[in-house]
Image (cartoon, rainbow, N blue to C red; front, side):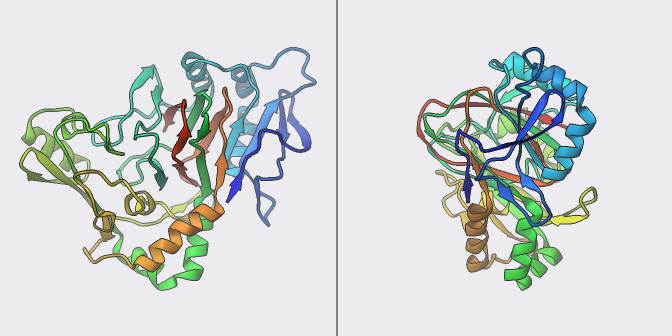
Length: 341
């Protein structure tokens, strides 16, 4: 596991006129020369204060290339302080909006235009590694996160290159990976009628499917590739079988593109007390605990844990990078998010 310090090392180069790329000792550095994540500060030699919106517009092709190479870019030290500022940065990227819609169980609140709160799961709980909405038929290709209020202690956002996890798991557990390739994964979760603030998922089925009519919820679930099994006023949501991996055409690498870790590694609440039942092989058979536990350990060892500073923006390639959230040990903390096609 790698963890960011607030003080970085050497300024390597002024790759573009308004940015300086910084290398810190605790970024992940790979044999192919990739530094993960890339970290950009305002160019201290610029003739006037650098606005991030202007810098992005002026250097968009270079930033796209950098994101393709690294998978993640952390922007630090720019004058971005509000949700509106963050929204302006997202718009300046030119990426098309990916709406946060029906069938998503995580609780978020729309703040403005393209900006939402990050997952509102209880802050003292871990949110395991995942690609955003990888279980759905459509998912965002890019994610923006913004630190509006710096965490007191804990609450790091952890990121890891997905193809690295695939390759390491294939080397350590080839039969497990072969079974995942062949069978895929099926996810299930029981959700209540109303919002449950104590749950790491939280959203009730009425909010998730944007209706209070069970038959309408079933129709919408079917269109989203989900099946609903009613248990009184609660419902078991079944998703799958879904592919366990995805071939990243741009990088020509296979990625660990699934929700296995976040489903198996936690998300307990009063309606879901056995994580081993939350995700199984596509044929319904249970997953081998030793292989899954090795996966969870590997994710923690390989990740970079970002310690947020106020004003930080993180851009992720959702097709290449898994992300998670560590428990918040000392409040406050407020991270905002935006999703792009």
